[in-house]
Image 1 (cartoon, rainbow, N blue to C red):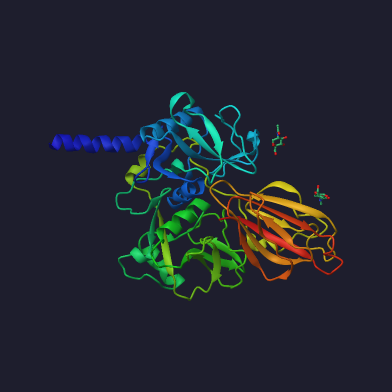
Image 2: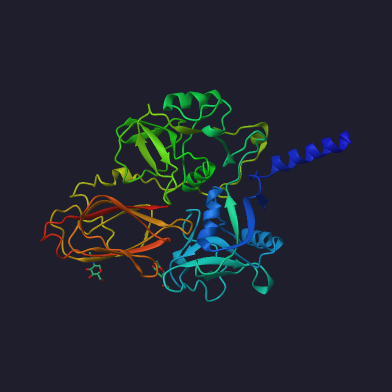
Amino acid sequence: MRFLISLFLFSTLISSAVGIVCPRGFSAVNNQKCLRAFTNNLKHLEAETDCSYLGGTLVTIKNAVENRGVANLAGLAGANNVWIGMFCFATGNTTTCYHDDNSGVVAYKSFASGNPAVQGNGGCIYMSTSGKTSGQWYSAPCEVIGMPFICEVPPTVYDATCTHNYNGYCYYPSFELTSGTTSTTYQKAQAICQSMGANMVSIHSKPEVDYIRALFLNSGVTNVFLGAQAFLPDTFDWVDGSHWDFDYTNPLAYVKGSCLQMDLSNRPNNGMWSETNCQLTNSFLCKKKISGAVAASTPQPMAGTVPAVVEARVNPKFHNALPHRQELLDFSNCNTTLYMAPGLITSFGYPNTKPPATYCTWRVVSLGPYRVALYFTDFSVYNPVYIYDEFGNLITSPGYNQSPFAILGPTNIVTLKHDSSYDGAYNYHGFSATVLPY
Ligand SMILES: *[C@@H]1O[C@H](CO)[C@@H](O)[C@H](O)[C@H]1NC(C)=O
Ligand SMILES: *[C@@H]1O[C@H](CO)[C@@H](O)[C@H](O)[C@H]1NC(C)=O
């Protein structure tokens, strides 16, 4: 018996020492990816939402070995078709197909002939996983049919004591701490985290934002302190010393302070950050890098096998401080057919006080898992700005002068149209909108 147990221990140690470690519920496929098959039939956005709450996306497939691995996993789960993490913005043109994980245009392709056949304006991609067509990809209307799906999360590091284990870190929400302090000032919160060998949380990707949203789901907490402090007005550093490589500041936030909090209210676009006073009491979240014995002996995955979850640095706060006029003539992104969030669009010639007369359209998109949110930080037009969903239905058409406001797109494609012919003549100066995925 003792022999069996030690043999068992020995073999589990070996398997984790030579392979990647996946969070509970996920299997290591090809020893490269942490995947999980879900067999309930969900529409694309519902499937993406389920994956995002696990800190992941639908599975991304970068080569033939991964493609077979996904087909096998789906087959074992009894699914004939599964959503995969890819979105195509045009028919018959794979240069407009993007991976969910922010790694860009797809290079490896396994489309069935005639695909992607995007009807209208956008297409979600699924894989057939049975019969002759197993492993082939097809496009389908995202919100019409439901089907099983495969989620992917980043590999992590084994730690038996960690309840919330994600991407090599352990997360400790304040409402679960045994110390009983669920809410306190920034300084005291950081002292509590440090007493556990952790720091207050730093955030480095949209999937991490989503993982944290899920940690606090149903907790009653509507705001948490982040582990950041301002070293200059509106300019923050993470307290754990990590790089400021991702920003999810609410472009419409106006309260100033030297600390940051994350919105966890039940708004559909929650998760965004805003400045706050460090002396206020707030819930908090500690985050600790896992570095156990197993971790030390875990081989580093080969370069390129870890999902790229680092997103481009975009700081919406600075988008209003437009560059000096002589540097460039126009930042509007007028007439773009595929403008990828995050970023900024403005009326043509903005912030010229006499805007030139022209007609512009903007087709603004985000990666498959996220919907498009438009945050108008400045708005002054004579003719309305017409805003349409991906099917050409008018969402809204604001005009004249407006206080800052947000428009949340129903899917990941939104089109805007504006005729600025009368703006200059009637003393309107145009608009500026920060575009974020939500
Ligand atoms: C595919 O789309 C790209 C980017 O929009 C474009 O440059 C290219 O000309 C298109 N190719 C075809 C065959 O339509
Ligand atoms: C944008 O496209 C429209 C329609 O093709 C055209 O009339 C307009 O001049 C373009 N605007 C700019 C600034 O290029």
